Image (cartoon, rainbow, N blue to C red; front, side, top):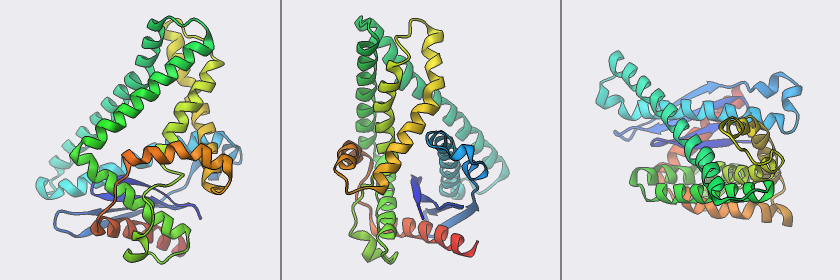
Length: 291
């Protein structure tokens, strides 16, 4: 059974095939959890399970689940300050929604539109040269972005929970008991990590955009957005292969850059953080057994 996950604010979200479990540690030290059923769109149609198509579906589902879990974790952490009032909850939901919209717009600007503008200023005319420069600029922005995040104190705790998530999943995949001492010995890096996925997306996008030529106007630049599901689908298949066949030389070569990049996005977690990740994973597995 494949388990995925994500670090959230003072907690971890774990996703099994049919359940999503999010565990968060409150300022009082108590761990609170939410377990919800989850039915993927891919499970409802054979067409949506086709290679590449399933990857595009998975991307949008993970974005939705990730934002939902992040919102829940933030509500738990801030609930004591807001006194749980309905007005405070409404204001928080509005603030969270606006934050997501702003982050999405800034992401498009920084990782999509701005690299195209800079590549155009360089003067490369050929499709291959232009898209190679565009891709390299996008990669440079991505590395710089992760580097800045790793210096941010609040994000460091999220990266520690990210490491706790990976350690717990490693223990499960190796058939270990989900106990603190057994989970601690595993690495914080994992081949199926979202960081690795984003890096693969960056590389695959260069190859896909070469076939779309050099965009010469705003309409053609934004037309590239239509290729995002295809890029995500191809990247998903690459990561899926890396997760299944870890011992192959080619897979190790493909996985190496993503695993190295996780040096920025994972940190060694504390015992308290590991306990939260273990709790989330146990809840998801228990729900699967009881379903």
